[in-house]
Image (cartoon, rainbow, N blue to C red; front, side, top):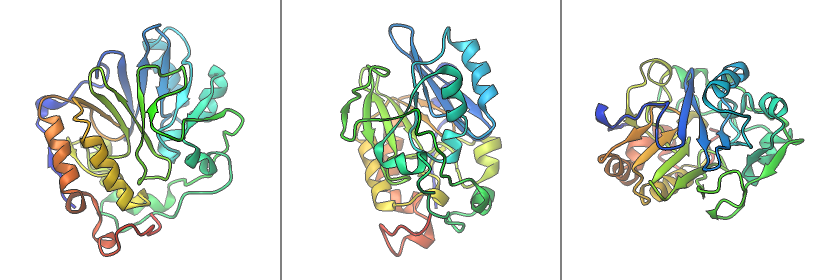
Length: 278
């Protein structure tokens, strides 16, 4: 696998990514708060297990009230870790795409990881990562199954984008007014397979989705091409630093155009579209 290099001056501060958007880094994953025009706010993703108190403290410092909802880009352990506890603490619903429901209602776990995906400590440790299922069915609500403007009142200015591949029901969010894109794990701005880069150094460069847990590479490629076509000016990823600047759209187009070489692991290139247990 390869990468797309990003200039340091294209990195946006996590606490001021774009108007009404800020984030919190928890070890190797980001969560985001979206502030709406009426001063309500929404939490995007819920971090790793054990991060409840960290998110609560951050929310108390940065926002005047509890959020109106928790919205998940997908159901992997590092994006839902505190969702159940936070939803109970705040008394708010948890939204996810219907295709993620089996992994969020106790029905099934995600496929086993692809340990040989790209090397690095994160890939080697992937067999011990939680794969679910978790059960938040008591507070779970469905995001719209089709694209278009988000039909829930909690995110009035954002468009829901179906971006499957990393997981079946993975979603991203786009604000057309300033071309701000929340990508979840559709792609990353650090190498997610390497613990040193993902959790420590956070070297800024475009990579595909975390390869050890990506289930469908044909869909993942299509999703990145779809996001690149939007020409986003701001990118807020689940893993890595936010990006903002004039070279960001071109860098994302390069990732989309050369996705197989940059993103797809060698042990998956011979059988495009194969589930491969990752």
